[in-house]
Image (cartoon, rainbow, N blue to C red; front, side, top):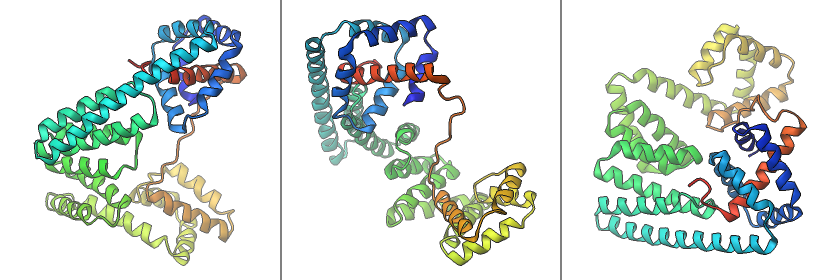
Length: 344
């Protein structure tokens, strides 16, 4: 969230930032109001508040800061009540549209159902709460199901990509996007998505059947090499569940040449450079057998798709940057409660 605040700061002039900081700090009630507003907010709410702040135009933030600087607790409460009422109205409308869409879907009227789900999504675009996000997600997944029925496969893929941007482990999004890829002949993408869905939900036989069919088609059309690579990765994951095998592989990796290690890493989906491979071997040479085993177990988890966030090199530069970023986040928290429509 601090990174999002800093990105917004980069788009503003030093003069605007200084004025905003002075205005926010000049009202002693703002920190208290922000703290009270944050009490019932979930982590997802805070993240979405920061995202919406980052999408706002600098001039809109500047105007809102000026208004907030002179706001009394009573005015703040009135503004919050009005915003809450607007968001409640939008949520109720979206729920009704979703219900209507479900009824139409059950009747086989997929195009009409899709229209209801799209309207529900539009109702929720400017609502920053986690409840609105959950409802929007449900409508999007239902919309994907409609698009599969109506043959709108590109639209289904687009909706699935939208879901996976914010929820990278959503099995329905992977499954339905994989089906759409399969229907338009993008078999490698289909197998990738369906494999991910199968990994998340290994007991689902429907997913397994569609994946098997897509894999067979890919193999017939010349995708055997990619399938063999996928099989190799699966074998790698399975073998690393055994402690003795992990120890053997760790010792084997220590004695490989950097070239061989880099080549094999690509087969396992890791793509190490020769330089990185050499550094990894040097680090491994000083590890105890217990540490090697822990490392190999970590690799097994990573192969299952655990996403490790990349550290941003260009973080907050100095104390002043940190203070301003926190000020921007306080503003985001307040706007989250007052203006769910900041990104409008």
